[in-house]
Length: 444
Image (cartoon, rainbow, N blue to C red; front, top):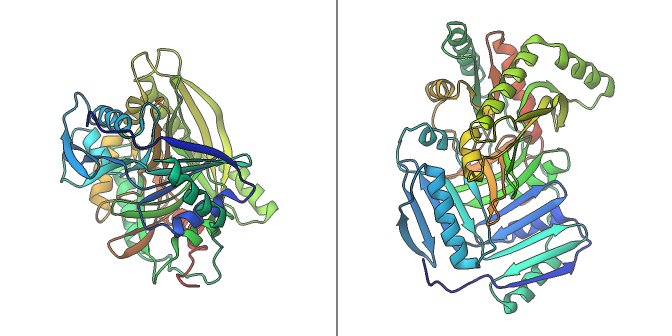
């Protein structure tokens, strides 16, 4: 990759008074290329095209494509260390010293991180885009390869807009209900036998008919309050989601953060009933235990890569409202050891404890046995990473997925020894409603 000419060399800042989410969703709807919309707080980023692509496959191989030319990358150390090295080289080749990449990691990355090689499908994919727009505080920053490309990009932004949907698609949330009850009952038996402490089991429900992904994203986003949101078409995957929590955030100066959510009650829009459920959530021994052991493991994992004594738990067991549900949430932070970067933090924390279980290895084995097929993007991550070492990885939950002509939703619940199969099934319904109520029929 050495010697490749710089490709991203033009940027400009322009006023922008529109709705950033609607504009970015409109850009996605009108795009014929791979793209990612990623919302973090008040900042919305949209990226399109692929100047460089880095893929990590399930067998541990790392491949890099620049200018459409694909090559293998032989990095040293752990899989994500090799990804970081390959991305740094590819990003610098196409964008100079300052670059940002967007992409995803599937749940099956967890097998590779635990030392197991299964198949050869990509489990992580990151791209340095051809063009990028960042929308924040009344302004837009546009980036492209040349000055000549900024004009058309500016025009696309000025006219881009997506509308909320008018015709919604109904989904049968009872699909697979009885099989899920049995799986939960079996998992409770394994936990009580001492095989593991907690596991998150999920179920899929198929979505009928063609869905407008951008309109679904915008319609659902207006009714959700996510930690992050995203709209993705990259590789073989399309997804729209309202992530309730992050897997990991790492700042350029080495502060790592994870925010485990565990413990759930429905939100129905009735202030008195929602308040009662909120109070019940904090008193329920099962929910409190499930949350506490998740926080403990998150702190233990961060401690493996952080300066001794720097890991702290803050905002312990506060209630976070996330669309159709409310959760117990905490924040775990630490300072990474010198010479330890964002990829080590992600490797330590992935998969999220709140989407896998405790211990993770045993939980992942049980998930593989109990759930039909691979999870794919569900309970993986959509992430951004840049040349300064900043990383932000959103946990892929409360999402709609499309791949190989199929469209589906997926949700899970945390199973511990005190779990009741019927209550855990109801929890999956509560979570599915955070997106099932907003599925917009294509062409409506």
